[in-house]
Length: 398
Ligand code: LMR
Image (cartoon, protein in one colour):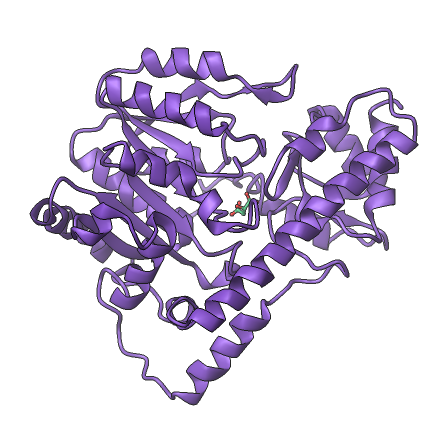
């Protein structure tokens, strides 16, 4: 029965791991998937996460099903984390929240819910995280793009972004990256966010924030949530999806949250009931472990403080590598400007390398990054930064 199944292409991001793993070159470098590495190039488990896990094991908890909406304590803490303790909408009980299978799971659940309630399309930035497009297509939405980035100046294409927003049909859902835009690392300034908020209000758009890097982008979780909080204060009934993969280093635990700001508590209850309608036939209810870890940390001020410092440590190491990579390229006498490597934030450097240059980087130098030239700075270390700079210098023609 499977004879007509054609071989599918490897995933443009996760598929790089397979290619990297089967490369036997000793100095190969994986800067494809966005997963943090310590300066020795190893996966990093936050010490506070290890402590929380030990405490969880010691409590000998059972493994009963979660509710369809996940663990309520986790959801409450996740919502406080992104909206802030003092958020009026949260205090008024008008935010519906569910635990999700990290960011991806929340995006899919909300995409399906939108499609059920009459949305035919969603706008995403051009470029955006590669997986956004199939997630929303599979949810039943047409994926439309709005201009976001200017390749020539390596900066935000703000006036075209605003023009494209003004041209969107009233009521459209617009996906926004809350901070550390993936793949460009280029975010709007506070003033630009204000203008985006104003235009979204004029056009009655539905802002949907993907928050995958809170705390991990700038090292300050409040700053990284500033756009989300501004939109709620401005009176938007936004939706937010949160991932705890990068900031808590809980990648494989698939832990995240989806929340929707409603007009009043009664509306929030109805929205929650609809999110659950989409979750139940999809995966029934979410796994427990990641929720327990985040709950242990965010319910304890001392552990939260440790988390803040350890998360900031990751952000700082990445930032340091940005400067080292740029410096190494300049020291090699590169004829190009690499200023954007240090002006971008978050996990990635959107290098500006062409597809051919990326392929040359892979084939000649065994360095694996995505075809759009996105380099995961989390995979750059003191040991490989020089090698990466030389290889980039080589493929960009010096
Ligand atoms: C990435 O963009 O590399 C990460 O968000 C991992 C993923 O799932 O693609």
